[in-house]
Length: 385
Ligand SMILES: O=C(O)[C@H](O)CO
Image 1: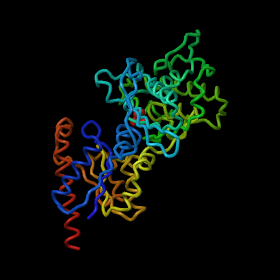
Image 2: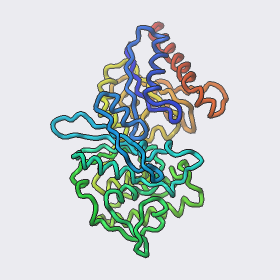
Image 3: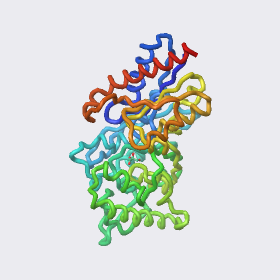
Image 4: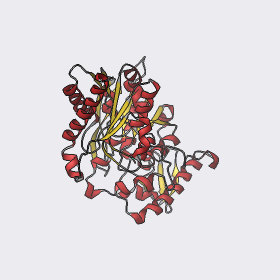
């Protein structure tokens, strides 16, 4: 029997490669003659570069960039083996300005800037790279991409003409924008935005309202920052000659990574579902076709899983190829029943009431036990058929 494991990471406890290895060992423990292939997956957020590099598509190149709080950090991009003469790079906001890079006690998106992504883009342009996949998701920023644009040479000013460096706090002050010094090389660059979500930039389901709180935004700052984001967004659109009927403020994915989805589109980027892009780069479709069973997973599954998260994309690919897909999640949340129609089975590794800390600590063991049970069931279905 051929198994394919294409899981997301279990955020905060296991990377997608670790999940793959644990599930694989558990399957072989129960079905010794199983053939298991692992394709670690991601959706544009954390693990995107690892997934692509892990599939043998290129090399990791270190670059020094501005980190979430202004000091330099060493980040990486994936340099893909070129087809023809055109080098291509995969970058990931999660390893430039990622939420996991900021200690929980120090999370304050008002003080965080996406400048590091701009530094990374400039480094790629300097190296002659004109094809970039930008993975968005798992970020600590909520600055509408202002820091990233500033690093590319766009200048932002307050009412009194003071130049702003680009952070969410500056969104509250920005009054004008000067595009004249922007690095024009970015306009000749193919920019694919691999987004982990379909949320818009602003409004109740926008970046600030939905992702601000998990980044440490205080409840009283949500509405003022969302309003500031509307003003900033329109300022950029007007400066780019974009009419209000072509506005991107409410378009799907603009709210990814605190509004980087919006800013990257403003400078010519094309937004695509992150899971789909990673699947294309890792050859997932073929691997699904060649398997008998597809196992996928994520840290927590709920009604949002169907909004473009990786497991739902994997289940779609499996259905297209007529293969059964099984979802193994760290835990289940509200509305998980909506997933039942998409999977042959949905399982949660948590097997008794326990604290989050305990579940994280025991993640490996819990995943192994749960996968063994799934494998036993699959094996039995073969034997008793
Ligand atoms: O980074 C974030 O803000 C979320 O993952 C949504 O993209």
